[in-house]
Amino acid sequence: MRVEVLNGVNLDQLGRRDPATYGPLTYRELESQLYSWGKELGIAVRVRQTNHEGAYVDWLHEALDVADGVVVNPAAWTHYSWAIRDAVELFTSPVVEVHLSNVDEREEWRRFSVISDLVAKRIAGKGPDGYREALEFLAGKANA
Image 1: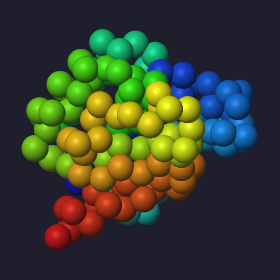
Image 2: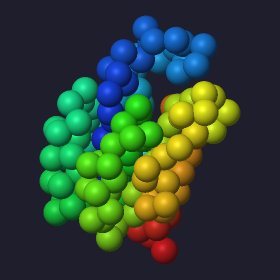
Image 3: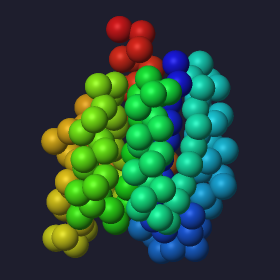
Image 4: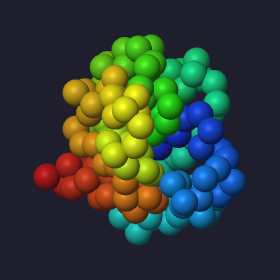
């Protein structure tokens, strides 16, 4: 099984950006953890991060042809990027939306997700463990 993990804008600043909200882990530490979890679960994982919306959409398009499942954390784009929504809508394989913080209990504008009705599962507020839950969910779908 192959899973693409696509992280969006500002996630490269983890560890610097409000650790009380996003946790103390740096992005590189999160990335290493994701590869480790993938290995444990028998999943080939590729982790990517960009601050450029067009690159994110390109990666979603690429994943259509290579991934058995996708974990997305579009970050701020979650709340307004109709381009990302259109790209996610193309998937027939499962997509899991992940957010480190509990966006449902934060500012009003963060509570809306343009992709929530398209994803197989949405995980918010579990920190890095939310990514593990997403990988476990996808592994379970593959083994079902």
